[in-house]
Image (cartoon, rainbow, N blue to C red):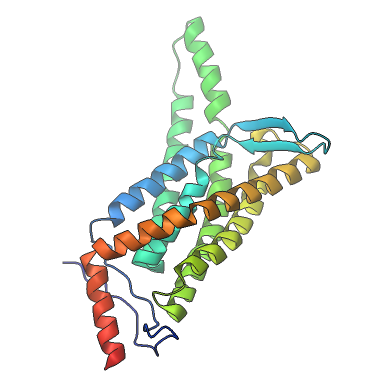
Amino acid sequence: MNTHRSTASPAPPTPSGRPAGAVYADRGSSHFDILLAAMVTVVVLSGIGAAKGVSFGTIPGTGFEILTDGGFFLFPLAYVLGDIVTELYGPRAARRAILTSFAVSILASICYQVIIALPPFPDEYGQAKQAALELALGPVWIVVLAGLAGFLAGQSLNSLVVSRMKRRMGERGLIGRLFTSSGLGELVDTIIFCSIAATAIGITTLEQWAEYTILGFVYKVVVQYAMIPVTSAVIRWLKRTDPTYQERLAQHVAASDA
C-alpha cells in the first residue's frame, strides 16, 4: 500500500477564489514511473552525447563561434520532465528522480570504463575499435561528473522554485512557475557544467568557454520557454487523469471551505 501523503495544509483562498497550498499525487500512480524512466534515459544519453564538441561556425560579422556539445538537443528535456514531476508529485518525488538519474549515470560511466578495460581482439579491426571506444567513451566520466554537479544544483533550484511558488499560489500561476524556475535552474546548471566539462569536450581557451557557456544557457532557456505551452498542457492533462491528484485536490478544497 502506498503510504505517501500530501504535506499540503489548508490556506486562505487566492484572489481567484481557489485555495492556495500545494497538492500532489501519489508516486505510486500510473505516470511517475514513465516520467522517471524518461528522465533517466535523457540524462544518460546526454552524458554520452555531451562528450562530443560541436561547432556550427561563427556568426558573420561578430567572430562569435557557435560552440555546443552533442547532447545539446536532449538535456533541456530533463528540465521539462523535472518541472512535470515537481508540479504533479512534489519536491520529494523530484529529488528521487534526480538521485535515480545520478545513480544510473554513474553506473553507466563505470560500465564504459569496464568495457574499455576489457581486452580487445588482437587484429587490426579489434585494435581500431578499442582506440575508438577509448576516444569516444574515455572522457564520458568527466562529462557525467559535470552533468551530475550541474544538474544537482540546477534541478534542485528549479524544483525548489516550483514547489515554493505552488505552495503560495496553489493551482494558479502554473505558467509563472515554469517561466521563473527555468531561467534560474538553467543558469546555475550551465555555469557548473561548462566549467567542469570544457576540457573533456575540447575547449581550451577562456573565450571558447564563454561562448560555450553563453550559447548553452540561452539555448536551454529558449527551448524550455518554447516548450512551456506543451509542458503546461501535459501537466494539466496528467492532473485531470490522475485519480490521486483529483482526490487530494477535492480534499484540500473541502478543508479550505470548512
